[in-house]
Image (cartoon, rainbow over all chains, first blue to last red; front, side, top):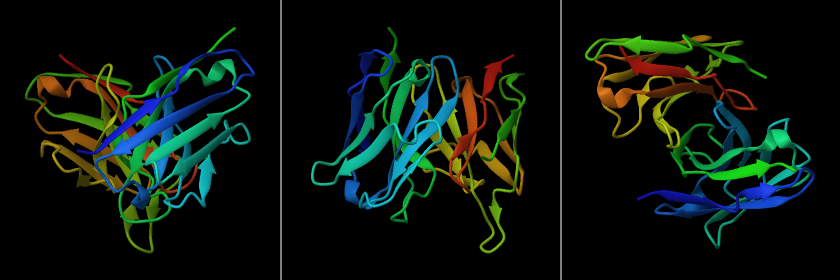
Amino acid sequence: EVQVLESGGGLVQPGGSLRLSCAASGFSFSNYAMTWVRQAPGKGLEWVAAISVTGDNTYYAGSVRGRFTISRDNSKNTLYLQMNSLRVEDTAVFYCAKDGPGTSNPQGYFDSWGRGTLVTVSS
Amino acid sequence: DIVMTQSPDSLAVSLGERATINCKSSQSVSSTSNNLNFLTWYQQKPGQPPKLLIYWASTRESGVPDRFSGSGSGTDFTLTISSLQAEDVAVYYCQQYYDLPYTFGQGTNLEIK
């Protein structure tokens, strides 16, 4: 069974940093692009970042570019999101999602999602 | 960025009746070279992560009941639930993956009338 499990969320002050992790199991992690999507409380979905199967290619939403870094460790079946210079408006549940099959770069649709980890940015 | 606009924002349908949700993109999300429509639909129930229903605008994900169907091309797309069941109460999102950044519609809240 495909599973992705996020961790690392919590309360952080504005300007602070946090690193999220996503542990994958039940599929060949190194063969799939991966993505992060976030959802502010009571709001809709916002794509945050994506990464190719090797990690060589990364892609970001404009709202996080320069502050967030997506990476992966295929030997550990784990996806990461390093978040720096956090802002109050970054408060959200962050979901890790597996990309659709067939390409080394992100396909762009997400067929398996974790339950998410809550990041709260507040003083 | 491509803006995705769903209509309506909220919808109440009787059990067993048809539910239709529309999604419009600010520019075409269809490829003329390979006739692919870069549009997907997700279902999100309260307290749960989104679940993939439809991709390539009309391909049903494995395990999704056949009462769910997707159609459309270019800038106009539709998700149809042919006979609404109680378990279909959820928020539904469309998303384009034609161009980065990937963008979602604002969501449609589907309820039972």
